[in-house]
Length: 283
Length: 283
Image (cartoon, rainbow over all chains, first blue to last red; front, side, top):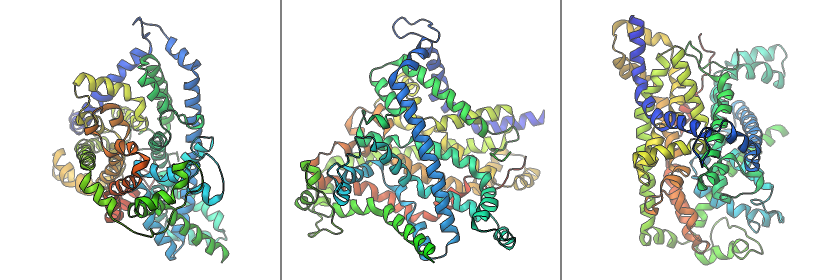
């Protein structure tokens, strides 16, 4: 009895946030689910018609494909490169490391709107980059746009993840490296058998943070190339925006439900276990 | 030896790359209009070349005078951004710190389920929940007012996730010792949890400020009146004729965030690092 009472009191801390989230997301999302099964014109139950419709929809397929492609390219790149850099900074002791640590969070401070202006100058067909390199690529309105967007994402987020990995590296005792070196392990073997296991507990949280960050690059792409960008960077965010303008509630609802389900599956390995731990990949 | 030089070179280049946009905006902001038109000729005329000087031949502060004295709109959008950022960050703290505490203290199936839903919500791009948010805001009658942007953002689940990570990093024994001599949950939260989690809370606040200073998608959908817009919506409307103005504007909105990053860099680094669990959790 006492235990239940105690649990209830802990629940009270959650209440303000839970109420707000319920009003703004959970409850209206119930309505979205209902709409996803109803036809737009004659509001009656139509089963999976809306889902079939978006499955055949070219924009939906393109946007889903591009988003998956963007996530599967940019996130591994970000995590691997930042891990490499964090290793360089952690095991180096010269001034370049200190300077890098000082500069690396700066990109986070640059508002997207200002940044986009700079990218426009650099990547314009007759802009600085083409002039310097004597090229004539149309960076923003060709398949290069995907590379520019990935570059912009890496540029903005790299420092944050370097700092994340660095704190992880600082948590690994120096003695482990010394012991491994005594056993004749080279730098690569030490990375494989000391660093990676030492960083494993934080991997899942870092991955989740990277996923959240990746969706924010929509701002860059929207301000760089508007509502109809090059085909290669047409993401689900553009799709929702265009459907929203057309008030295509049926399509939007069905797509929202599909995407929420995909995330629900994706997050299963990372969920908090009953014991209260944010259990990691190491189980 | 070669490897070490190469490493320094890479870090040095990355430092330059990180600072480049800020530097370009600063240089541009003190360059005269004619000079800019000459340098960025390729961009304006659609042919020829563009380049950028390291320092203007004739530095001038005329752009600043123009923006600060002749452009009342600048103050409007600037203070709109300040107001939105401040209200959202403050509201988020009030909601998410207790919620994170609740999640870290309250265990059980329901708590796990709710946390799972929170994690999904955190990952979803804004556009997916846009329809549901739009319906609620419309129903509440706060469309086209600042509350339409502030209220949903206050209940964002991202800070809950971050601060929760911090709370579970605190050893359980500390709280056990406290709960022996006092049974009040609120007092434990205020006197133990909050002070111990201060670095995490601070870092979440800083990240929130950086994020919401940049706000774009929400005002784009929920605010129709231009006098309510934050600067992100206003910058893209500046035409190519007023290039110097754009430089100064972009630089001025960047400045507060750079000051924050340099002022609070160590706090931010400490906080970011501690937000992911580094040690295998007790289970």
